[in-house]
Length: 297
Image (cartoon, rainbow, N blue to C red; front, side, top):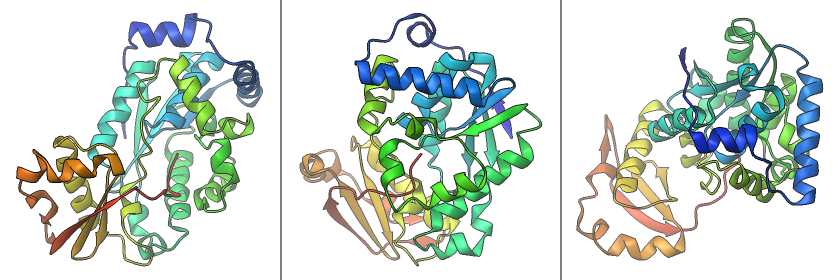
């Protein structure tokens, strides 16, 4: 477990603590209701926010600071082989920008055969492990009165969110969803807060790249992580490398397909997609339009 505390940037500090947010009346009412609800749920002690660095959890973290104060909010980042290295670094940067300390907690969902089996309920076992670790290692140590996570109102309406069941089992708060804030509203509020992730695409965990009922292994996750990181360095943005055993299926938005056949992609070796440790791919296949994943905060 590691702890880092960041100094907030001036613009973010002003946006969070001093400036009156420019919001539409409905968003303003929802934000005010969320703040009041957090005040009732956490009358003393601290709130732990399960944090990924994405727009939902970052917006929740920033709103929690407005409602409770910086000293009463803690960001919690679950770290395991399913977390991309770039996402781990980015989460620290976002929390530092908001000015909230971040604690990393190591999770071991890969030890659970039900998680490795990779059925449609995989996310339940992942979130269950995260919330168990928070309860066991952080609640007492950091004086947490409650834990919250970034489920929004759109997520709450979806039937394919098994991680939500784990949150219910552990009495984890879902302030965005309870306030009726859907994804579009969350992004509007994030822009008003001047958060750098306001328009960041969804970044589901690396295990979401492996088809259901194909075993999740650390080797496969590392292979996907290395391939996606290499492709991002070539300038590709919102991408997925789907792991189909000895075949990698690359997914990009339609407007990036041309990038695959023009420099630098067209003149660069695809070696990063070929081997990682003992795992290897025989070929790669481009596709378009990343599919939505249920494994999202």
